[in-house]
Image (cartoon, rainbow, N blue to C red; front, side):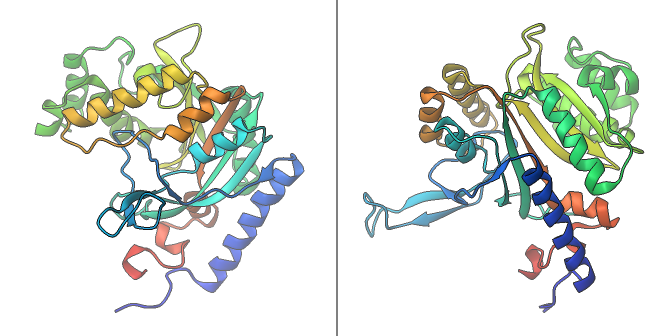
Length: 325
C-alpha cells in the first residue's frame, strides 16, 4: 500500500506559484473568481462524457426508499452560465472536475479545471486571451491558429467537411489503424474524431501551442454555428506538445437550439446502448431568462502544470492520484 503523495514538495511549491500567477492574470483583467457546486441535480448529455454520481436521501421529496441521483460536475459550465444569466460580469474559477474515464498519463478522474467567461468576446478574442495566459505561464512561443478543415487538408489530404465514410475509412487504413469498432461506427463524426486524435493531434503544436477552430457543426456542443458557413461551429481547442489543453466556445444562447442538441445527444446515447442523461432544466431556464453574448473556455490546470514543469505524467503534478486516494 502506497500512502505517500506522488507530488514532491518542490513541485508542490511550483504548482502553488503557477496557480497564484493564474489568479493575478485574471485580477489584472478585472475578471472575478467565483465558486459553484461540485454536486448537481443535472449533468451533461454529451456522448463522450460520463459523470460520476452518488445517491442522496435528504432532498425535500426524498425518503428512505427513494434517493435522488446527484452528479459530480464534469465542468462548472452550466452553473457559471446560470450566474452570468443572473447579471454577473466576467468570471472565472479553478474547480475540481470529475469524469468517469480511465486514469492515464494525462488524465486523473478527479482533476483541476480552469474555466472562464468573457462577456462581449467572440471566440477569436478569447483565443487571444488564452494565448496571453499560455505565453505568460509557459514562456512559450506565440501560439498559432488553424482551422479544423485545414488541419485535415495539411496532414491527411482530405476535406473533413465533404469527405464521405469510404474516404475516412481509407485514411484510417492508410495509417494502419483500421479496427472492427471503427468499421462498425454509426456515423462519420466517430471516424473524424479518431483521425483527428490519433493521426493529426500528434503532428500539431510541437513547438508552440496550436489553436484549432471552426470544428464541424455536428461537434458544436454548446457553441454557436458560424453565420457564414453553417457546416462549422464557433468552437476551438488548443494543443501543445501532444497535450490537449483547452476547449472553448462562442456560447450558444438560443434555448430551443440548445435543448434540441441535448435531445439529439440522448438519441445518440440510446443508439449506442448508453444511459440517457437527464437534461439540466435549471440551465435551460437560465437560457430562457437570457444569456448575454459571451465566450467561454475550459483549461486543464494539471496539464498546464505538466507542461510548465516538463513533467511526463500527471501524477507528478497532483498530490494523490486515484490509485493512492
